[in-house]
Image 1 (tube, rainbow, N blue to C red):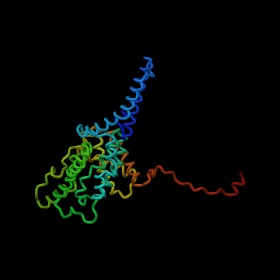
Image 2: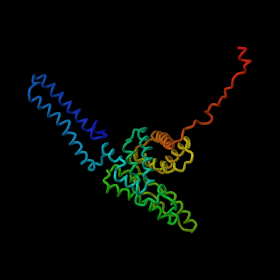
Image 3: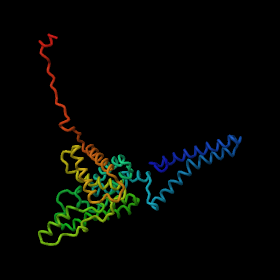
Image 4: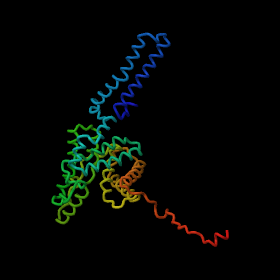
Length: 329
């Protein structure tokens, strides 16, 4: 268990040291009962157990895990911590190419990490997945709202073209991730964080334009992401967090009730669209996510939660009692 949940290479060597200590105790116990406690072979066996357990075994584990992770689609805690470093080349590129997207990912990571703890999911995996889920936007950053400065490039494009550009960031992200050597579990966040959701703004715009021209409505499939839908709770968290962070930017005066309504609306939209049908998330999880997201957003906004007005007690102004009344006491 110490190795499976290790968050550093030092923890792996620490587990090896515990193994070596246990082996030495076993050797010493048998040697004591056999009357060979001080024999050279006993000391040699203890030394071998120390070297093997504290040095060789951890080295084999670290090398083997590095080689076998891509083969079995598994990622260790040590590898996740490496990917969580802001000095990772892909994140350093993203902050230069698309600083708004970079900040969006960091905020999303804070949200999903706290919520993952609440529902018993993997907080580190969720946070790292949030950091990288939008790296594909680095190829065309100006077409995404968080990076836009000045004119909106989509104003000069047809809705179908805009939707294609928006959809493309998923494919671009997968391509960048593979070239950058990201493990399969992180690539899943890139592929699945939109599921098969509708790119609603451009779909409705295209439908309105078609109605004005008397043409048939556009094909909804052309305005949906390719999927797949989220397959785990961590992936569902990032999908919800991605939408919540994007919409929370429009909240002028954040408060806990207002943010709770915003998060609840996002969850309802995603669930109603069937995006959570293929993961093992429960209604209890969604309620915990709503509370956690709203609380974390409030903390990040710097606003102070205020109790409802009906719960506030009226202020009492204390005035000195008249001297005559005091004298009569």
